[in-house]
Length: 369
Image (cartoon, rainbow, N blue to C red):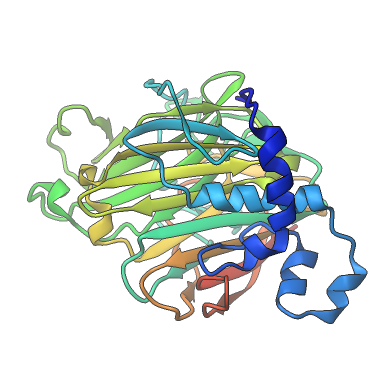
């Protein structure tokens, strides 16, 4: 996904020189800056004892900028460090290799982060004060050397999920118990939207970034035209944009931004390393902007209710930032996640933070094994 750009030699020094100044600007978010940089900008005197690589700071700043750099229109886009201009790329449309599920039908698996059956999850959710217009999820990792996706159940004897080494998904999910006009008067129907990065989603060797829409409990009648049936639920995908299949050891540089604009577009932005991609589609598909007040973010199995098994000694710190029209800390809501997938990490305590200088309201928790 890397594209040549002759402006790199001019822009790169500017980004490095901007460094910390960019991070603490009022409009910037320090979602991915190295701990030493974040601590120093917050006045942590001990931070000076930790070396900071200017190149890493520049790339982290660039990823932060691209996470909030709106795509110009509906469609798919890509950018490579250090340019901040989105380049339009071809979108993809296709059927996934595995059948999507909303919640796993079994609850006899160990209680780990993510789906645990019965429509509930052991995951933390950030609940905003008002309606969410944008959420960003990012990771900090320690001890992560490998991950293997494993199937948790089967349908008619067929194991579900994309399994194997470095098979996982990163999901930022909305709340699931609100109805909108997209339910078309179906009693009990609610809407749910996912912002996803998934390895080998359409086929081996290529990952996809996209949004997935759900009409939950639609009923026994046929789904609307263009939607797929999943039991009594209906689902559909936005445009998909192709990206690299990334090893789990790169998780610390990955982040997802989800945004929803009433009367405009919903957008998923995925940033990692030196690249960024985005996919935008109209909000009217499920009108999520009118009811979105919770956000779940995590790394879990790759579709079909699968589980992401990390190596022993893994630790993943999850941060979810919210823009919800307030400066008040979100609520950490336990066991309220909506994903059907899981991982083998146990979640520790969750902390919530008010807005602080350049940091929007957020929650943070560490999961480990």
